[in-house]
Image 1 (tube, rainbow, N blue to C red):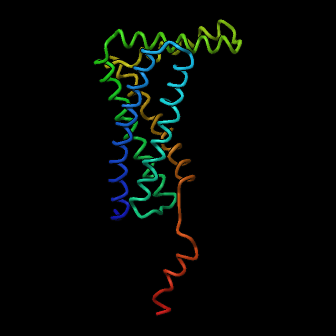
Image 2 (cartoon, rainbow, N blue to C red):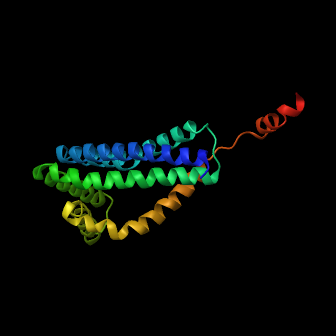
Image 3 (tube, helix red, strand yellow):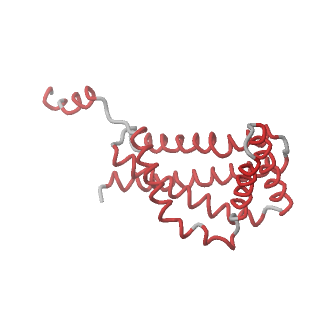
Amino acid sequence: MDSSLKALRKNAFLYGLLLGITLLVIDIITLYVFSLRESVVWVLLAYLFGSIILPLSAAIGVITRLRDKIGGYWNQREATSGIFIIFLCAYLISSFGRLLCFQIIPDQTKSSAINNFANAVGQFLNNLKFQPHTINNIVKSIRQQFDTIDVSKISVLLPNLMFLIIILFVVAFIFGNILKRSPKVGRAFDHNNSNFSA
């Protein structure tokens, strides 16, 4: 295996661990915000930041750090490989960490978080004039998703792992295409001809 590719994968693994721990901490903080706040605005803002803005920012941050770590440039293959390893490690760490931490969090906190979030979503959809049966189905789905976060239901994750790996690879390919960076043509030309000019 090429030494540069080996170094890329090693650093991607480490940054994946870092991202996974970061996502786990964000999930726990978000859960506690859900449990402490009943306001629709507070709950939806916590969801927006905890589920979208902060995770996306953290992911882009570690990806760019990895790119800088290997010299600031990488092609499509290197970018996709590195980002895929980051995402896979982060997913495994955050998912299994969430399952374990959910057992430590007090039942009252979990119950309040579930109820506050479900009620906030229900009120929000009601303000948007959704049909009552649609709201009920969405709220029911939310409660079921919370119910799956349990060590005894770890089997929920494993059967879907192969499908998730495919999804993660596709997402990594998209991110790799967006965040790839090649040396400027002029700089590469000067570098390649430096010996000739000497």
